[in-house]
Image 1 (spheres, rainbow, N blue to C red):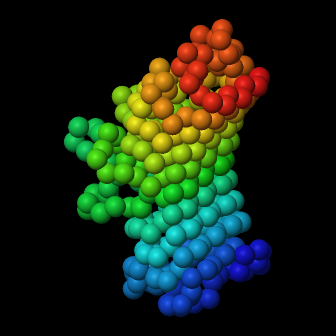
Image 2: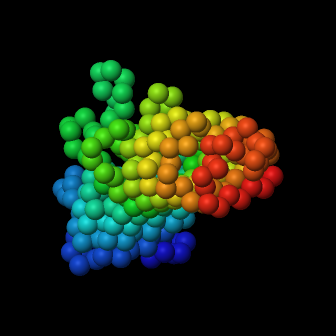
Length: 267
């Protein structure tokens, strides 16, 4: 049902299709299921493993539940304001060009510290292995449902790609750091407001291939990047001041990355 520009609504009771595991949807509906269907069945699409939501101009919300969903891709849904919760099998999350979307639903405890759980104590998300955010103007920092560090539990996020999120300013708040100990690839691209790489990067112990592209306000690398012993490839493009500081042998930040095997610099 993807690319069906004239589709006004999905078939009634589609959530009851117990064998449905792959679904692509384009619709003019404001919600995938009617209010009555959502009230009767909190868990639906129980076997669904892959869901692509694309070009849904009026869609404001998705269904809750989907306990088997492994891949969720949402693209070009300008009215969508929130993500579904309880996606405990999620492995891949891709969100592109959703101007109203708040990707965060985490809470803060009594001390003002952020938490990845909801008010009832349940987890809203399984941390995916692949996370891609593109053209999300409301994204300013990484979501609260990513775990804070240090922590004794290992997370599953391996690859993180963020691009063209104009208001994205930092990976996390000052004084915080995320426990992304499995993160291998980190790509930051086209952030006009991104001006600081936070300290606390020493928790990214498996990071091997960071890429920073078109972040002109990023003027220096964090001191603790020297602790990333797994680093093998560093790419910096479109960051003229940062590239100067990282110039081999003479740049002020060269000592921070001299242990890196492959460094690509371009203004």
